[in-house]
Image (spheres, rainbow, N blue to C red):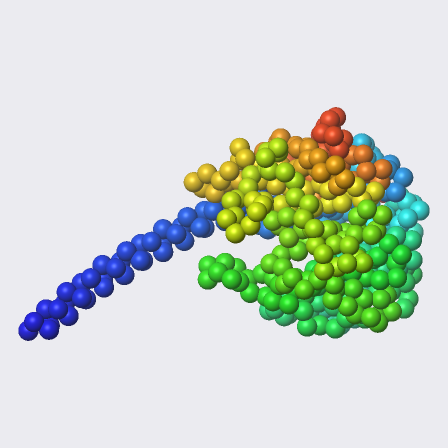
Length: 415
């Protein structure tokens, strides 16, 4: 009898403890859901579905024209116009089937290279002379999500990945600018997210993840364990540059006359000297003298910062990036406020470029590195959508706002 009473007593205690745990878990999940909802609402249209947004912006070498990928109801189109926002029009009326995206100006500035489904196309900036450069349909199970043009315009590097794989995988391909000589440089196995040509165009450097999953039971699966690799443009000499298995890497670029590699691991900026790749330098913006919010890290000397979307200027001397600001710390619903900053690589001087209360998305430096143009998709994901872009000097002065015209207001190029 006593044993049975003890059993009931222990059972009651267990039920109470389980109830407390269940209540805690439910509360935590609700709070976490609100947090991530708020976070995603301020981290760009690439994370959640919205009706329309400016996906990317590129500028011509002569600093006169720009091309915009504009996504509307799931279909992307390319618009071209003057950098001051005048004469905005559809790139071509000779629309290939499907979406058009990822435009790049060829070095001479008179032609544009872009993707359309599984084809790589080119045309004049007035929309004429539309040609297929390459059919990227190597097989129907692969998709091609990015391509890079060499500085001299002679070679094209692109990344492909299997469309039906649950675990992201990818491989690198290279070809001549006329579409000939397609060569596979790497095989499937891991996930390549970014790739760039070396300044002498003899090598390719790329970011590769070797782990796909999550470190927390409530977190979604993403690619982690990143390192930098290099390979010759003929596919030989594959080499691992770093051995960090970083949680995250992005923004791979050459800086300071091509002698150093830059990347962002979300908490700090990194510099690697190619002659001494084992020596990695932090080049964090100073949190004490800026409006950038930080998270105390007792295990490290420096505070952690949530840095994202780094962009190196064409002269390799400046970095534009997004960071959470101090007055925009998350409230109970998890809303963050992000602004754009710029840092001088030599002086380590940080300037806050925007005080607009939103996270700028697509952005590009002008070829002379003196101004930045960036997209502002306002009010998403609410029904009333305002899409516009802004131009600002790199010292934070002379901000110009240009609204994205509607399709009815945009004429088409006449080929």
